[in-house]
Length: 51
Image (cartoon, rainbow, N blue to C red; front, side, top):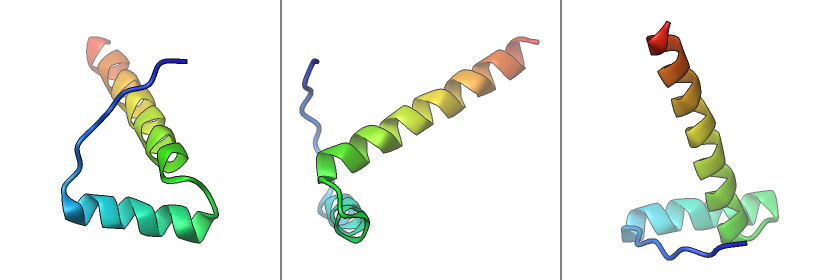
């Protein structure tokens, strides 16, 4: 698996840290899940526009 480093604003980092804490997950997993979901939504949007 590849690893990437991303920079987040302080506010964004706090937001994802709180989500991770509430969900009982690592921040990295929450960010990965959020990015995966966004990628899926963008792909569906692109397919819809193509039609």
